[in-house]
Amino acid sequence: MKVEDFNGGLPGKRAPASKLDPWKPKIDEWLAEDRRMRFKQRHTAKRVHERLQNEYPEAYGSSYPLVQRYLKEKKRERGDEPGYLELVWPPGEAQADFGEADVVEDGIKRAIKYLCLSFPHSNGGFVQTFGGETAECVCQGLGDIFRHIGGVPRRIVFDNAGGVGRRVRDKTSLNDLFLRFKCHYGFSVSFCNPDAGHEKGHVENKVGYVRWNLSRKRSGGRRWTPSASRPSRIGSPTTA
Image (cartoon, rainbow, N blue to C red):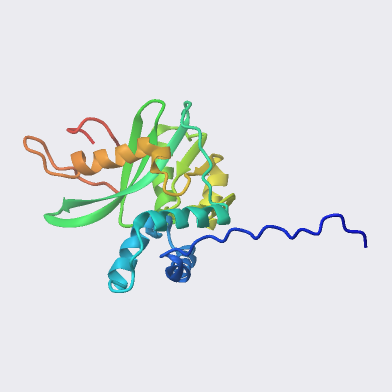
């Protein structure tokens, strides 16, 4: 065989060892477990760093930036780069989310869940209380709100923590009951990207409004009496 160049190739430059190298298998183990957890319960770089510090105080000596860079690399390897949702909201599109608050009912303080449906274009919002946040609660609450307002939104945006379904990368799975409910009323569904509550910031604000203004006893005002039988319109702090 005729060879024109007998020079050997330059040796590749080896990356220097990192203080994080001994801990990468443990981090990978935690990240693998995270795939079965809700998005809001998964490890962030800060949580990983703090957990290593707490569980291995004598041996662990890496820095937070190293952990942060490593998790970013793992996200790129898995193809977890975020997509984007349109943040301009036309008429007839809604956002939905659950909130939790302490209320006094029949003289007894207890925690309740409440479903909030908001319309960013008109700044309207409606809320209904429940004992949980299952798919049954979502379907009941949305159905009551639809009947109350006399119409159905074209599209509703949920987060990934609700009981209606979940989006993982480009795949979306819906709860069977909610899927039948959605087909019956004919609206479309979108899910927020993981860790991107700002994509449905309007309903997040409504949820906070209910928690801090309607579910607390205010000086000179009145208590909010929760109703599981009919929706309440979210208005001024003195009306429900």
